[in-house]
Length: 137
Image (cartoon, rainbow, N blue to C red):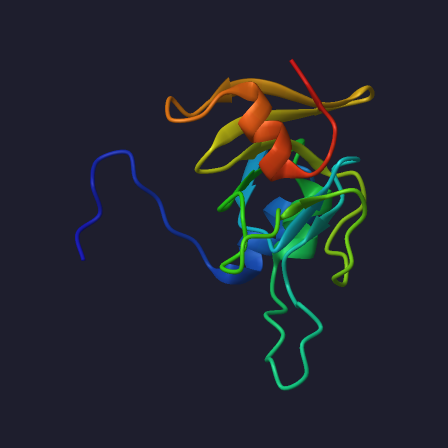
């Protein structure tokens, strides 16, 4: 591995200091579910026999000024990962500010989920149907 000009590395204990100290502007995380209020579930599905992925996500979700989520819009079985209320164990409450999926970019607002951008292959009505939660144009 070669460090490029401008690159940096540090001890993992320092990374937790940065997260917990409020020194991060943006954290980008994956998710199993995001609620319309911006609640985040990304460490465990609650499925029997699955191994929880406990790590620094809770620190990132609460320590960063903004949390962006990148995920597929739908599960492998076709359900929306954007839900009225998370049914999986929460990582953070009302911490997500923007959601990037393979279908759209959504902003979490006090009024609800605002559509910022839609994939060229679908329109708003199709996105609304697939999402299963109210969306704002």
